[in-house]
Amino acid sequence: MKIKLFGMLKTMIPGSKDLDVAFSEGDQVKDLVYTIQREYPQVGELLEKKKVLVSVNQEIAHWDTVLDTADEVALLPPFAGGSGE
Image 1 (spheres, rainbow, N blue to C red):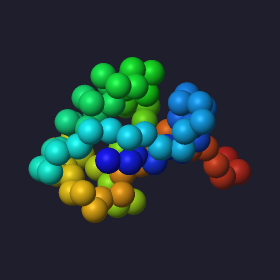
Image 2: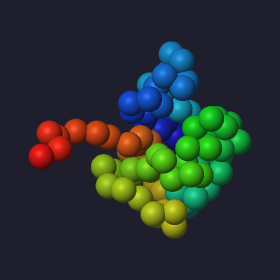
Image 3: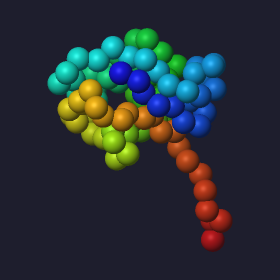
Image 4: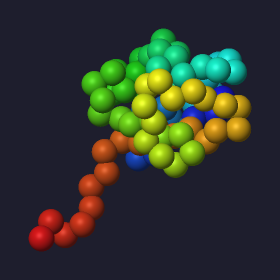
């Protein structure tokens, strides 16, 4: 499964805009996170500390969300914006 990277995550995996992660039909987001922690420990650490969110089909996903082969999955680091006023 391809997982899209945004923001600082792109710089953590040089030359990559996404991650390729093994996936089985019926896996949940938590299974995907465990795989990322093993294969990409620097990204996995941020997921564990909840500094990065998992998005499935452009919605923030819960750990028990079941994944499908057609899903679009992305890792979202903190975003800043607005004028602060």
